[in-house]
Length: 388
Image 1 (cartoon, rainbow, N blue to C red):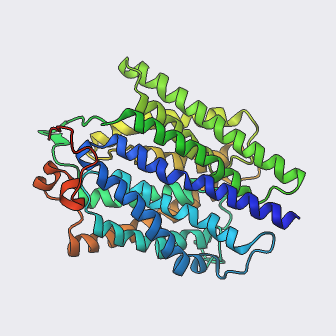
Image 2 (cartoon, rainbow, N blue to C red):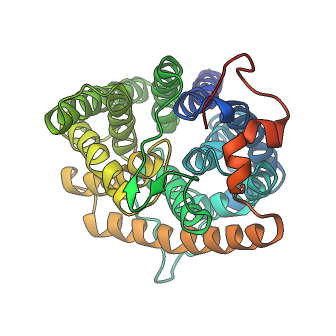
Image 3 (cartoon, rainbow, N blue to C red):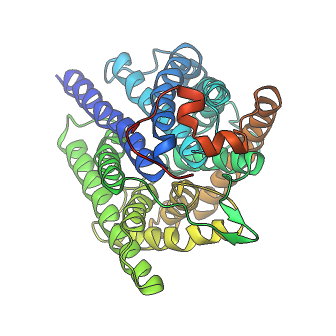
C-alpha cells in the first residue's frame, strides 16, 4: 500500500510541476512585446518536449546510474518526477534571452542541457556522484528541490548566454537604460501564480514519500513553508519597490514572490514555520536590488531571471547553512562554487560554438520586425498595430 500511495503522490506532484510549463510561458509572453509572443510560446513548448526526451534517452541514466535504484515507488513515477525538473533549467535561460534569440540554436542547446549539462549536476548532487572522494565532492550539499541544482544552474546558463548574445536592440541607448514595458500584465500575473502552484509539487514532491505520518507531516510543512516564503517575498518586493520608486509595481511584486520561492527551495522541509518569512523577505528584497543592478551592468534580462533564479538560488542555498544547525555553511558555499565552475564554462563554450555555427542572436532588422514574423511566420496578436 505504501508503494501505491507514494507512486500516486509522486505522479500527482509531477503533474503540479508540469503546470510550471504554462507558468513560464504565460509569464514570459506577458513580459515581452507582442511581436515576440508566438516565439516565446514556441520556445517553451519546444523546451518541454526536447529536454524531456533528451533526459529520457540519455540524461536520466547518466544522472542516477541506472533505472532500478528506486524500490519505494514505481521507477516510472520517479523518472517522471525527475523529468519534470529538466525543462525548468532551460526555461530560466530562455526567458532571459527573449526577444533576441533564434529558435533552432536554442533548441540544440536544450538538447545539450537535457542530455548532459543538467544531468551532470544531478549526478554530483542527488545521483551517482562521479566526483565522490575527490576534492570537488559536494555530496554534503543540502538542497531539497534545487535552489542550486536547478535554479542556480539555469542562472549560470543564462549569464553565459547574455555575455555572448548581448542585449536587445535599443535596450541601452547612448549609455542610458531604455525601459521596454511588458505587453500583458494579466498574463504575467497568471504565469506567476501557475509557477507558485507548481512549486508545491516542486518542493513537496521532493520530500520523496507521503505514506507515513512522519512523511505526511514533512510534506505538509514543506508546502506550508514554500507558500510562506512566496507570500513574504511578494510583500517585500511590493513595499521595497514603493519605498524606492513611489510606485506599486506588480511585476516586482510577482518576481519578489518568485524570488522567495526560489530561496526556500533548498530547505523548505527543514525550517520552522517562521524562518521562511525572513528568507522570503530577503529574497524579495534581493530581486528589487538586483534587477536595476544588472541593468546598470548592461546585462539585458527581460524577465528578471538572473535576479530571481541565480541570485536567490545562491541566497537560498546559503540560508540553509545559516539557519539550520546541522547543515554546514561551508558545504553549502562549496556546492554553489562547484556547480558554478561546472555549469558556466560548459554553457559558455556550448553557446559560443552554437553561436558561431547558427548565429544565436537575431539581427537588428529582425528584432525590429519581431521574432514572430521572422522565425514563426505568425503573430500572437495579428490585428494589433504594434510599435517598434
